[in-house]
Image (cartoon, rainbow, N blue to C red):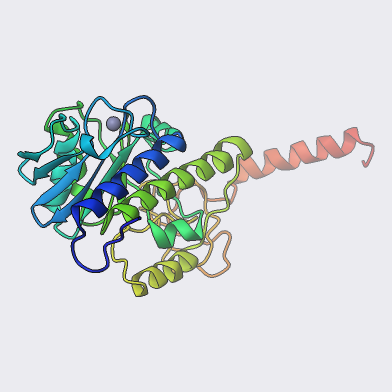
Length: 298
Ligand SMILES: [Zn+2]
């Protein structure tokens, strides 16, 4: 049976069964290699079941799982808990509404984490509504306090994050939600990779489309997830379009673009303007007349 967190805290049996099932899916989907990855879920406000270290998550049995309190004390179980539990405990401490945490190394999401790129462009309607943007936590030395420190800023505002040069982390109101978010993160990363890397083009959503998707997300009760960047926004979000209309202003301009309905040229930032100065204009005229002459038109 797969437990979802609808009617208060589940039983030990339900939580352990769900963790074992997520471990099998995580391994079968190639989201982890060898003994990587870890899963935890609450069974009471100050009790979590978590996965052990040194075991493939695809082949766990319930006697391997460990019961801990949120201070990291082992209450039940003879196996050693995952070394990355500090990261899980910090998520629970930062946001008491979180009841489960999943950590894996899915290949596409991990590739973005290695490239130092967050998943923050609005390209998929389902991703905007379901998980929102996925920020990148800065590099942290595994097993140290740097790891929980690196993810803490996102735990109340987002639904998961990438871990630089490492993998991905997701959380949720129950173990299945945390796991589904991990699946969504990897799908978002794969599609980003196909469109941007292989096809070389991604038609990003407009500000207006993103606004409407986020409105629907909020109406469905999801208040976390941030705001992915629409097609008008620069990498740092500084040129977010205010009018909600597509602005074709120069991709590299550093100024603030004041967008404008249907306009192609009336950008007020002053950088990268498409109009030519007189020297450029006469050079273009010269080139054009040379081409026409060579083709016998003049
Ligand atoms: Zn890891």
